[in-house]
Length: 161
Image 1 (cartoon, one colour):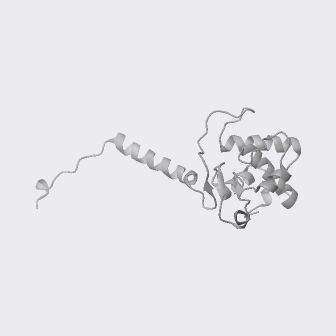
Image 2 (tube, one colour):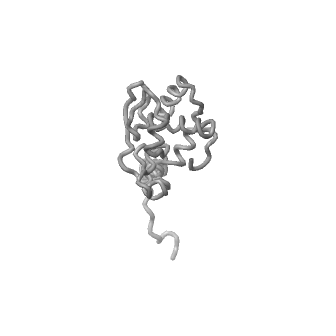
Image 3 (cartoon, helix red, strand yellow):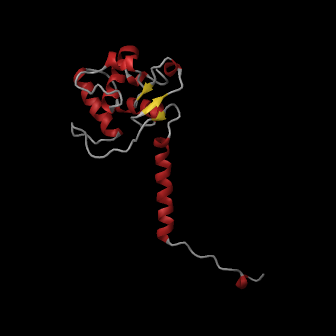
């Protein structure tokens, strides 16, 4: 068939292509929030605004607020060490809960950003934080307190702990 007789394909508009790229990028960024590999979601992870302490009410703000509390209480740990462990444990979902491991089989599932079990959370709870294990700042701070006692710092944790 001669080239002139071939049907012409409609051109995509620049706006359509841009929206497609942006939408694809947003989907890729949302994948870790949709389902953690080591824990299942127990609720929404969408947050807005700021915490009572004035930090952004998101993963970055929760880590920074925890670090401020940890500095006051002399609990060692760094932003990178906390972030690395959160991403591995819960993909950043503060409502994550592990319903399949040995702790869950005993009736004490791991919960929250750093997958802490209730007895550990209660033992290593840091004064001035919430007593709710799903509270991101309380979960991070208690987990870092536990990691400091057991491993010297959350920075020394590179696997399930």
